[in-house]
Image (tube, rainbow, N blue to C red; front, side, top):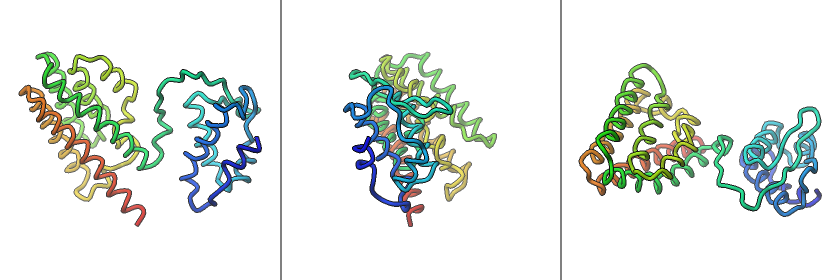
Length: 248
């Protein structure tokens, strides 16, 4: 346990929120390395707060991420305990992994790689039924943005239908696994914060979706890839501008 304390000690309260990933990484490492054995109790919240100069909120966020990764379990009224971690642990992305703008940007970088290729495959393989489902998702999105909705479910559905149109179930499975948390607005209110206002912002997103759909409908794989890359890259750049404004 002393190894854990030494690993986590470091910056003070000025960057508390930034310590969450470091705390998670350090505890995860010690659990995997056996420094904290399965069934062993982690330090209490109060102990972690005092030793690492962080707030209770930061400690709880770190523990939540570890719970989501199935590395620890909390027994109410008793404490938090390390769990046995399989060497064949599967890939996981939990909602708690998106607490900052930087986290969301990281996921967008992953999506750019995956969904750009998915759009190209969809253009090459889509059936009429696939096109109908993508068009239906577009229509629902357009309706949602007229009703003061954030349109997150419809936005996700559009991207899911593009993944389905690839004919490769792994694209669909990954999108289903990630769920609506892939949409930045789930975590960061980019639409309401946009200089042009919520409606204009979402109308622009809708236009980018339409460009993707039209390329897929035309069977133009290169244009579909370009349209998807442009759409997701625009989202990333909007988030980066938001991040820069917050840090200014």
